[in-house]
Amino acid sequence: MIKKLLIAFGITSMSLAATACNTVQGFGEDVESVGEAGEEAIN
Image (cartoon, one colour):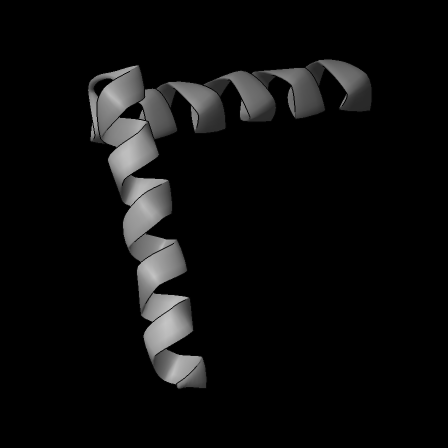
């Protein structure tokens, strides 16, 4: 039961993340912007 619940939660999380980014390119841009923001915070 718990295993099925965790799997369902994982699938839901991945689908929400995919919907937010829309494309693999969009996901790459999101990751890049997070990296740039981290660099600016360090400098």
